[in-house]
Length: 317
Length: 250
Image (cartoon, rainbow over all chains, first blue to last red; front, side, top):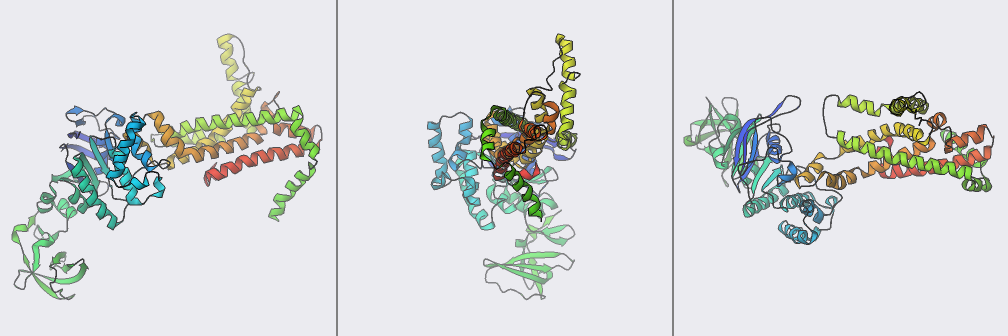
């Protein structure tokens, strides 16, 4: 069922002449989960809409599913499931009808729709709410209805546009775990658009970091974190300490050591769930961030702290 | 003071026609009943057609952006500002004895077709002043709808008809009812257009006018006014209960 989706030289120029996406090549292997990560305006939503068929690529670009050119195939016939940013549930329909809508629109008779809808309700644990309307649901429940609606017709490709954007932090975390498990179990080719690096890292087998209308780097979450291609990618996917002379490091590369070669002055300490995040004023004027191990003594604000640096982990741009 | 300003004329009007016999006559005598029926029927048809056409225009325009769109919208909604008499005059220029329609049919068939003074002309005039209001209201409602709803339905494989039925109609329902009711109420009371165009057709505002000026039948004019007023008020109440703030925009 899962499709191999490919963008070949796909670009998008808006009516006012701004370039939403520069010519881009991208291959999504069958069953893979790719996270498109980037700040707002980087082109990630544009790329998603081009995949969906909701936008047309500039002449010359092609979208292929399993090698077949679908650039001119209308949205209605691409068999793509999409979870919209605000979920876009049909407000006057029940949860069950929302979920079954894709089957209804394809002309599947009611007798065959019902078991599939029941299966989807079970999958997202909403059996008890089948008769409710969207405005009677919590944000998390709506998100699950949107997901079930997109999955019910067994799409070849699943697109998720900021699926956790409308939810509060605690819920995001819980649903992220749930979605990750679901995507792994279903093995559907999926693309998740997000501006949250932790989300992208947790959900994607692969992450594509986007910047200024193009893909800056593509790789596994670990690759991108540990070997970022450029300064922008490095800063976007994690905290970056500027050591001067084009040398940078992650917080983990620094640790307090009285014999260490570096010295900074403690400017702030944040305690968070057993760990302490320490901010230091660097001699060059910048700021360094590191994390203390649980149980390690927290130095006083204003005091000087010597640090050891793991040279193998130094990044150069 | 303000309250008195509003209520006194109303009280006088109701008092003037307070005789139940007058209402009985107004609702049984054919000359009045026929005028009432023609007025209601014409207003209903106008409202339905105006809302239907406006819905198509609004649905098409809502999420399309192209050069000249603002000008087009301005032109479509401009006749709101025109008085009824002017619209009637425009209908005469279109369908009168020297009108465009007569010229065209003369050239085609050798016969000058004159529709301005028939029910068709009246309907066209009513439609002309109703459409802009409907377009304005429905365009605002359609623009306020989440475009992702239509996109979601498309991605799920829904045909255009199915999307109209399942997304657009439910989404626009309050605005459709509200603008329809306002069209109906406006058409019920339109005198200027009727006065200029309705040579042989008797619509209620004109009957009131003739009862009052020609027959100096104050009581009957008052009774008919109350009936017209109540009918219009009900339509507006419907509009308000469905449309909320939107009816104010029309």
